Amino acid sequence: MNTSATQAAPRQTPRFRVWHAVAIFVAANAVSILPAGLNGDEAFYNAFTRPAVAPPDWLFAPMWLVLNVTSLMALSRVANAAQLTGAHRAFFVLEGVNWVLFATFNTLYFGLKSPVLGAVDTAAGLLLGIASLGLAARLDRRAAWLILPRILWLLLATYVSGWVALNNADPLFGGQ
Image 1: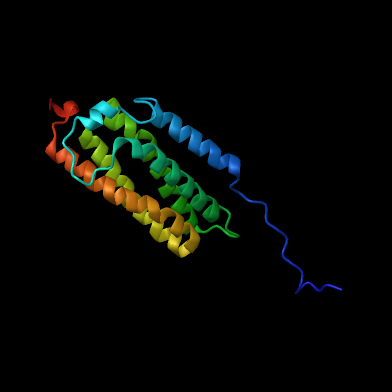
Image 2: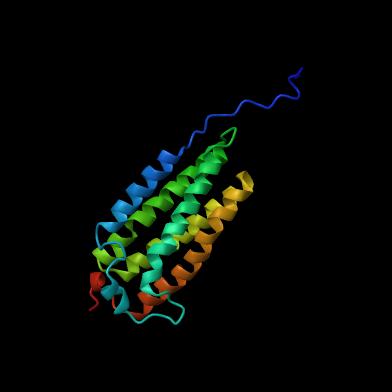
């Protein structure tokens, strides 16, 4: 005979399901791909003087695939918490803005041909990502670990994009 103290709690229906993650992934990547294709405009990127630590152009698509998946896993963990608080809602806003920044990067960098706007987008993504990481660490440590690779990548990307913006002409802002 089971008592209520020994019975497992009924499983909560997840708020955030796989189809939510797929919808976010498809929408953000569709918007991202529109201006320059899957890998961006490789010739535009490769024409810039870059720092020695700049990743090769072929690495961006697979790296962002991994980072998108881990970010969605983190979002799922936080969204499916037993109770949602103001901190959870703040996390959702930060992650939503991060997805908008991800989706618009190619338009700013490749579509508008602006390494300056690309650097601003990347730095904003890093700052908001750090805030997301901090909230996730309070809400769900595993979610924070899933966000950490994105922060590490954005640290490198912010350095590289800032370096490129400072050391190359920006066609949008009158450079050649």
